[in-house]
Length: 173
Image 1 (cartoon, helix red, strand yellow):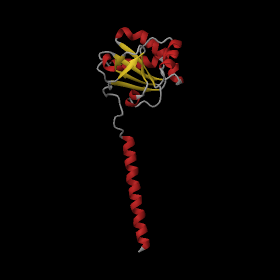
Image 2: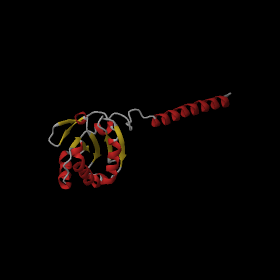
Image 3: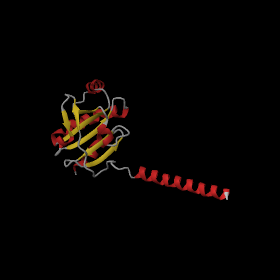
């Protein structure tokens, strides 16, 4: 009888482990809140370089390139000149480039911004709340948002000016 009880105990423990494994796999596949193409871009409020409150909703009616970056991120640093060129080229077409600095001191970001001569708006996500809401892991991550506030493209990794133009044209369709 002792041997039978051990077998039932082992089967029970294996059953519980199997249920836990299935739950873990299901949870990782169906992450609720993960933004995807076709979703409305969540609104947020942050501070800009002049310490003014700015919101994504203020840009409704414009195409938005929302770029999450940090000065410590080499690919982020590399793509800044291309973002600036896109900003200069398309700003009269109701396209706005927003550089969303992730978790850094404003002074650190400002030194870099002046060094690379960026003129597009920079917003500061000092507490990383927007970064978490947008599920940004690897940087740079860029959201291309259409005039209706819908996410049309999510691009992770460094982009060239040519790639940005192609993704922008897909967003504006």
